[in-house]
Image 1 (spheres, one colour):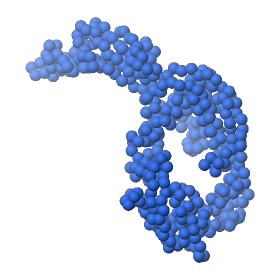
Image 2 (cartoon, rainbow, N blue to C red):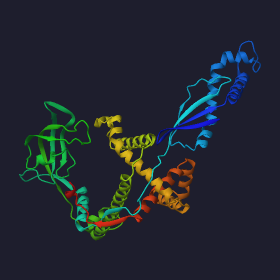
Image 3 (tube, rainbow, N blue to C red):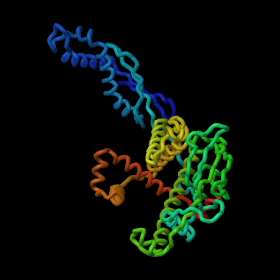
Image 4 (cartoon, rainbow, N blue to C red):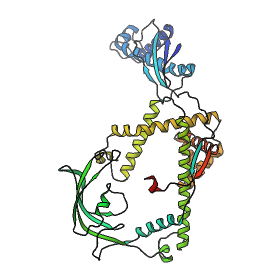
Length: 438
């Protein structure tokens, strides 16, 4: 067997394999013998069919099987010899017809990891938000809890809609003179001030009273999530059918006891909220810091990305979004999203993720970082706490379903990111308020 390698690109190679005629003849003869043993041809006993008759009746299939056998038996050896290791299933080019007395050639197109150099990936200069959780943050969460247990009552006073009211509205959206499908509701309860409805819609209702009608237009940005509305101006007709305010319960120990938690005082509730907010903010800051570091490294190097990895990342993202939509009762179809459009939308994110993953893999190799047994055990112990299943049971499940390698890769990625953070040049800065970001 002879092998040569052609470079199609930095991430795609073609292995050319040539099998000598004598080996081809041996394989063809071997396959013919197999067919001769099981051939059923009228006038001949099983196993006694002359080879010429076997070739007449089964020749095409024999040659096809022989070619497939040769590829199956030699491809792994060719990959090992050339040290061109595939990231995904090789694409075969074996259109050549196999013949007795002739060499047989085939090729395999293989995607490989890109080769690239990394410099100055340690000591990356980045800014990190200071950890700040103040009383206002706690009060906001307390108010949200009170609202969740509040009681909606119709307004008794004669006044217009204001922030934190619930407006009960009937509305219809129009593009030009045509009603927009799915943009109509009767007696819809809308919280004013949440900013979760159509852009500018809530602001247009401020000051309106029960029974009032209004017509207004709002423009949707080019990056709006619903492609049917991107860049469009929609005219709304609205009628206020009712206005309700929320009556909040008193914040006292009796209220806290009624929540059924493991504590029963207002102070304990606020302490728990502050603890949870602090933990959440720590995770946000850490995630943001890691993203800044890997983005800085990624922006410093350029290399081609294997298309198979990018495609797999895109499809995984789309599947995840579909599952989230299904859980909320939505779907791509209802939102006017097509699979092809989502592939286009997700490609830049997928490319950045794959590039970051390849860079982290390279750094782990350069720094000789590995996942140790203790780290694996700790990971299963953590999963056991979250799932309620014994760690040993979880480990056996992972081993039986070939999930161990994936887990090791995830842990190695985390270890490498932690290593980069520990070796970065980090400056703490005051966090930017949401209003300033907007």
